[in-house]
Length: 377
Image (tube, rainbow, N blue to C red; front, side):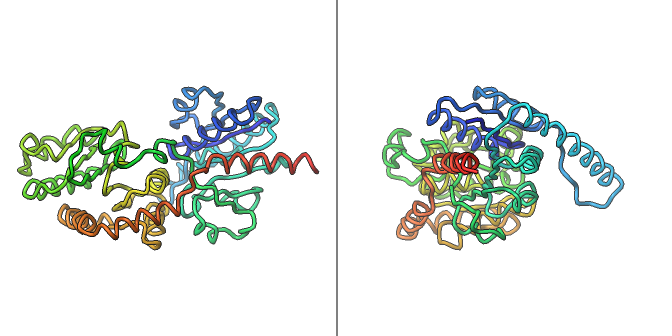
């Protein structure tokens, strides 16, 4: 079997593709795999490190403003798309794939579009609750649309072509035991709260987290591990001091730049506070950790809030809009959850029910099915 995996931009698009590639090679060792991505995306580093061949196309996004700068940007984007379609067609012609899977990002569009044109079986995996632009552009033509949760099916005009596969996550998020994780971290009987805003951090949310620290040091009733992100680490230690927070005197508050052992911390956490990107949603459901979501307002189509609201509607999460929260709102929300063990247990139960723990295997099965259907024609 020869498979093209096309994705681009962020780890949330690329890592599921790599997980599928690994599973394909493990299940069908003779599978030949080629990635197609953008020439300026994270895939340039992540895919070769994972041991896979990568072909690059040049592509950029569209801007929705009507300004001379935006108009010029969109003209350049249109030119790039035309060139990327030609290159994607050549890649497909040379590689001769049996099936093409897109896992998101603008870079996935050219290969999917040209695969559809050539009659090659195609599938798109949409990890968000609502389809992004790349998915919307191909949704009516691809053979299968793969989605993370049953609720997502209603977003598409042809639900019979929609398959609920979940989104692949690392196995550590699934199989770590909560008590074993707490023990490995040396935690006592106090609850653990874990918070982060992504690898770069979010300046305004980090400021609000400093406000929360100030309240915590007055009543240190739980442990709190917070990752500032790389940008936040440059200024936040001094900012926290200026807020009157003495971290050395309050070891219950652990502020660090990164969280390197996220599966362990998420397993050990009694409450999480985080954004609501697709990868985070999948990790939260896999680990069944009660979570307070503060969706980023700076994303296309407000998809993070839509992700989080889907979980909230099932009773599986708590959503606070960034504009509506400060340190005290976050602190009170944490105390509210920690003081209601029955609610937390129910949140965990619902998250476990929503989680698709065999996501990678389901996606591989769809690709194999598409190949068999092609052979039968």
